[in-house]
Image (tube, rainbow, N blue to C red; front, side, top):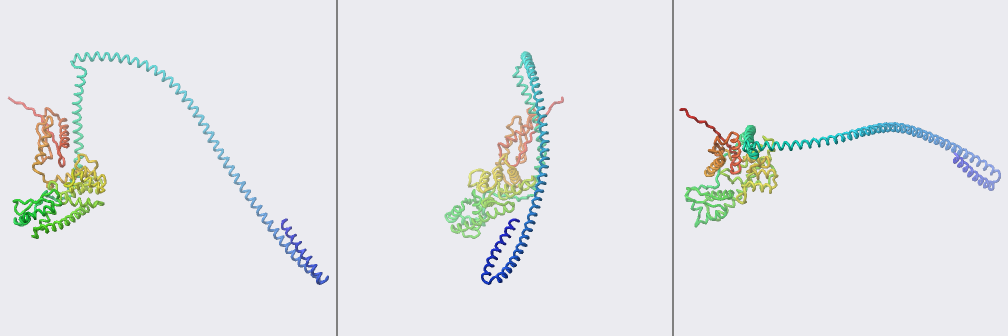
Length: 539
């Protein structure tokens, strides 16, 4: 308000000064009358302006009063709100303080109770320690009495022992040995009975399950009978063709042998020559090349070289196609190209007159079927079965057993460790994983089924003799016979030397000896026969 009034007064002073100046100017120019009129007009105009300024000042004053009242009202409202918030906070603080004080009082009460309980426990422990001390003293006295009694008992026992030795005529060591011998005999007898019962139960369950799985695998896979030989025979239209193959001074036959690496045997066999060599692929190349030369009729070193090179490319293509077909038929993926070639090379490899390529496919399918029945991944099992004999594709070039060669090749070309182990251990007694067991079983099934392989007569007879000799070497064996092409050994024992439980133990010992000393496909059954005869005569 004061500032508004000061502004209004200052404005009036300025207007008055201006009017005085104007009045003096008019008086000096027009005279007194005109000056008076001018003054009156100026004064009237100044009054109008003063009234306007006054009205404006009053308006400003009223606006200032309204704003002041609004601010006062807002301040009052904020003060009331702050007072209410303060009251609410104080109430909350009072309630929380009261709750915390109650908790502190309860905690203090529990601590006090704990202290009282601990004091009581300490007093009880002190009383127990006192009682224990008394009992220890009493036990020491009892121990002393027992030691004295033990010394007297030992003396009495020693006297009794000497007396028993005099009566029985045996020392204590002899008696212990006799007792241990009796215990050992009884233990072996009981162990034999228990072993027989466990083996019977286990065989009954295991054989049934194994037969179901194997029979199912054989029923679901029907493989062809494949029989080949390790030498190749080329049939000729006439014996005259033998001379053309030999050539002038033997140049044709030397050229064929040099470029193929295969020996050509020309003997008295009518209309046929024999090709011999360790590399089955090169033997196949030589066979096809000679057949084409015979059919073409042009046989000379240049033509021989041309035909052999052409056959080599065709056989190589056939190997690749055979490997790809085997991979496709078994449904396995991610096989290295070199491994596929090794599988394809098996098409020209034989083992005991059985084609290894067909054998590998058969093993793969049988492994897959058995794995499916056992709830195992079939693709892994088929993969291990297909690749188990890849070592035979190069065993004429690399030293070592084909199983280890195959495992090294599989590892080299990125196969998983379980596949590598299955390949390397498929001829071991105890493979390290289940896929090795499946491959071993499928390999045995494929190799041992009728017609799958041919075995040399001498080797067959030698195996039967070894089986009978191993059984005869055991104490108490009277006779032994190898039956069913070496699949079963029947052992006849002396009834007076071997009892029933001993027969069970003997069959197990013979089986272990055969497993250690011989190599054979499948399994061999050992049957121990014990017979007791009572003979008398009526006169």
